[in-house]
Image (tube, rainbow, N blue to C red):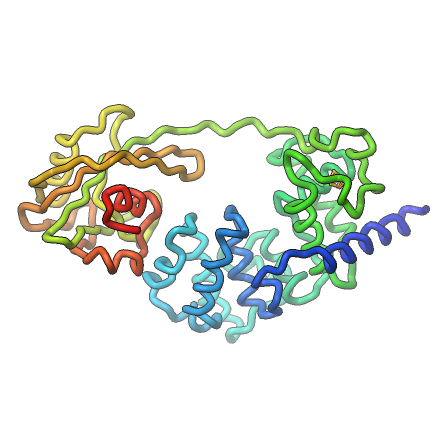
Length: 359
Ligand code: SF4
């Protein structure tokens, strides 16, 4: 078989397999570019099962691009809360605003035009151009990277620029003019459900006979393992400050993470140095408050990128009047049944849940 027929055969098998075996996911039942954009942004760094309820809820709250563009940021972040990586939500909204302003509300179709929008890089531009608009544009995500490195026995680890470039080059060569969206989704679906990282189910693979790693008998050895990222331990002392039943939330000026979001007052400290006295000192200095009737809550742990954050929290009643202006620009006491509607980071939700104040 010549090279061209081989490529045709590979594409045909993949697309056929995808149409028969694809999972029924809500964003696959629409051609609305806006809905597909939302799903693609949510799926970055988040599992499919986690995304489904967020996607449905988000589209209920913001059914069109205009709804999202014109919504208060606070509402957008609240709908995103728990999904993590809040910058994605902010960029998605900024992108929607730009489409409204510069493209009369119609999402542009070309790769380069898409890439001019905030938050859209090569992957998302390829996904939108091919899935929503049917243009023969490639895409590469972690699944495609793994499938290609196995199919063609490409050396290198997933973070290596050389492997990255080579996979993009091959994806570009292979993406067909006909049904490019199905082809791209087939590659990702194959990686997610068959060509899995640890134990690929090669016996079920529609393109096994084209696969060089399978022929070599060692598919798991592709791609090579990336060097592990350095983990950074962060400890913080956290205050669950109450006035009666209401809980104090604040907004920080220029936060390192979670811009525009509410948080429990907290301060980072040296590993192992979390003490109630440290928290009291921080509260007094930053907010002019102290805590009475103090009780310690169970420590909670949370991971953000390469940081492992442990929260040591104390709950108590507020004494004093809040004084904002230093590190914080906004603050207020909220009833606990309103917290789920606020943009509050997952690690603070965990702290409140450990204290029985959030479920
Ligand atoms: Fe992946 Fe196995 Fe299919 Fe090769 S044969 S693409 S290793 S599932």
